[in-house]
Image 1 (cartoon, helix red, strand yellow):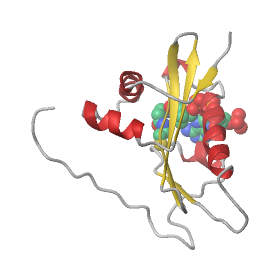
Image 2 (tube, rainbow, N blue to C red):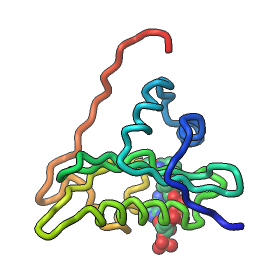
Image 3 (tube, helix red, strand yellow):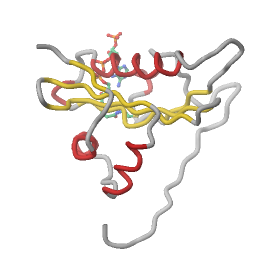
Image 4 (tube, protein in one colour):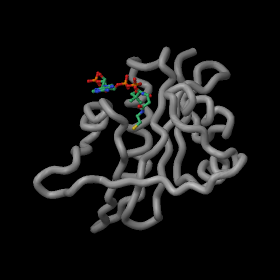
Length: 143
Ligand SMILES: CC(C)(COP(=O)(O)OP(=O)(O)OC[C@H]1O[C@@H](n2cnc3c(N)ncnc32)[C@H](O)[C@@H]1OP(=O)(O)O)[C@@H](O)C(=O)NCCC(=O)NCCS
């Protein structure tokens, strides 16, 4: 059987996918809360194992943010990332009513901008937009 797409993912699988990309470890409580509060999740499955994910944060109104777009290294380059992005964007488009606009933002990892451009995202800054900006708030302590 080929790759299938589910709309949920365990915190453990999410943590594994994030680790596969070398991303920072998230406190398990925060990971579970983040997944629970997501507006939409896509998880790519091969047999019983999760090989990719994408996650949508949406305020229910006019602002959305796409995060945790990840495919296991050995599954990259097979159209899985594309299939997940298409599902996330379709989910968002399905929420549009006449006269509605939703601003969809994301933070591209270095070198992945071309992947997102294929779905209509534009790099910032450009003639219209300034830079996207970011910081991390942290409280030191044991997880
Ligand atoms: C970025 C990522 C999700 C892409 O997933 P993928 O399954 O390998 O991508 P796909 O095979 O679906 O590729 C879809 C299209 O994007 C293109 N593409 C993929 N990675 C690209 C890149 N880094 N730059 C430009 N184009 C890229 C492919 O060539 C393909 O083009 P086509 O449709 O014209 O054939 C995957 O490489 C990944 O998980 N990387 C590590 C984690 C990461 O950095 N995620 C991004 C977080 S912001």
